[in-house]
Length: 69
Image (cartoon, rainbow, N blue to C red; front, side, top):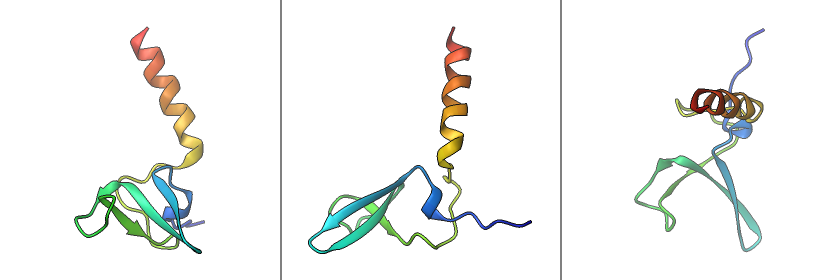
């Protein structure tokens, strides 16, 4: 089964409320055209190279902690 990875499940996605609209940004991709310096994204677009799924975050933290001790 080929599952397409999208920005919707990425850890780096931020949601900002702007009046009655919700605008979504990527913490990793930078832009000179937005007031906060982050790139606007759409949830259904294909994920970039910085994609990191929410449930994978705990695994990475455990590995890093074990390496430091």
